[in-house]
Image (tube, rainbow, N blue to C red; front, side, top):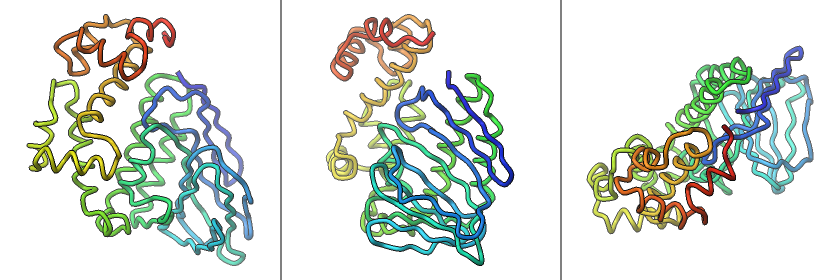
Length: 284
């Protein structure tokens, strides 16, 4: 269960989540601010990824000796361990929202949104939707399992929205296969507990197994089979930490009909058996 800190100052809202119980993608903090003229931050290095999205006004983002002018309905990505500086305009200062996030699959989700080392800026016209997501995150600041899940869901919705422009993004123009990867991952997320196989994933996106395998290797540096296994093991580890379910039930819930095969895969991925993992990681 997360420790959540919420701060409210005039024209400034901030939420920080100290404990992160999810692994693939999780929120570190979020906020909204109406900046004063020439308000700035940095030069500074961050420990996690941050997206700022501008609701009103103009400002400037500096990274790697490059200056970007950012206006309404545009956002910019700050990457960890990189010196950045940003400042609101003197005459038309920013109002923006921001989310700080991280996770084992963070680069995958950024790629869906067309963001990478060479593409740090994005555009999204329905700014009110992103604003509502962040305000909802801020409203669910009290400590509870329910609020933790709501915040996680809102983070995925945020990424889903900014990924809608993928067909117009620089990444998509260079790699038209991203949409297939996205569809595969969505299918796995929705069906991993139903004993699906990679063959069924191929059928869903109407691609041959060899082509899909090459696609995953090119975009994610992992095979679809390995992605499916690791996704299931991540879900299993969350259940082992947070529930009292028998391991046989967790095995079945993660798409395995054979508990022995599940335990073997779990140990191969995480290095220890499910029972040992539960004993060392349990948060119940």
